[in-house]
Length: 424
Image (cartoon, rainbow, N blue to C red; front, side):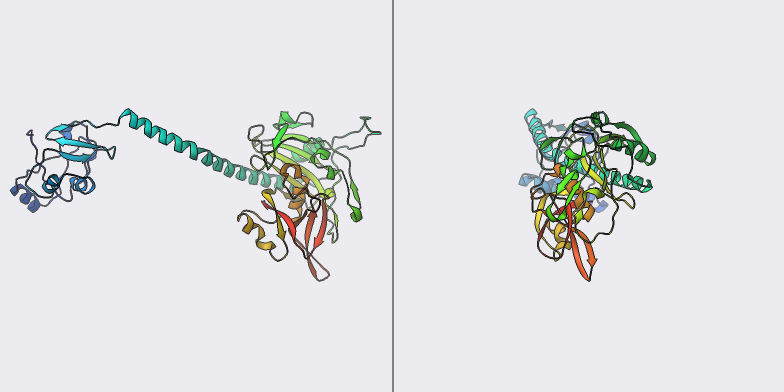
């Protein structure tokens, strides 16, 4: 190969893929003859002579179109008999250019400053995008795990013949006597749930951390609080409430118990051994005695973030037979102005398609676990929370609402109420 090479340029020259590959000419024989008459010799690409400095070279026609080349050079590439001293071609690291002159190549490389600048830009972009990306992945994972947990517990509860009557619960003879007996929650787990669900470990109320339940949690609005270990500290309204004309409700306090599932979830269970069945009520009544079990779950045990709405949540079981299991995940705002006319689309319009109006049991679960939610409006004295459950009686259609403080079910067919939208 001579020391001076002239390029005959064809519009359809293919790309050379590596330094050892020759560039096949795809011009017609007539085109080749035409080029040779004009003083050009069609020769292989000088990739072999360059010894790998140029790994990929686009067709020279493409170079002409994409790179600002001196006018005389462009004329030569498109047919002018003038020969330039050098030729600009693209290297793999676009847009760096190499000057090819005869059989010599000017070495091309990034400077250290350019590399550091590129790495800095990549680092900044990663720092901005990775937390959001990781958060979205975690949220999808938690949602999937929560739904799986709900399905497993729904199936397990359905296999139990009845949910009340487990263990022993007696009151102290006098305040502070310490002679009361409370084995209700532990017995419910041992003799009830463990028969229909794989359970690895069971802990009493004084050792819940041994079952992966942290002593503190972060609620839906970001506040840190101590985890309750008995029903009264979960919600005092579950033990005693007096709401005027509705009368009073009272029950014995029960200690919680914890357990770990075979899938790695940690569960803190509050149990009512005297829960009542659904009697088809048509008037106001308290929701508290309908609760049989309330479970606070942590999907990854003691690992973070230990936050409700993320890896923590709650699941409530109502009625000792024909039980209803709910696991509502409430939206972070209590809305006002819901009524029978706008109820069907209220939550989807206010939030997203994932959220719905709560059912009668879901809003009772929200009431029981209100300390984990702590949303403004739920704890207000006038917070009557609208549900999607209807009551048809005496030719009229009513909607069940629930008092945010009293836990009292009532029916209504007019007015505007508050509500908390939930994911299922």
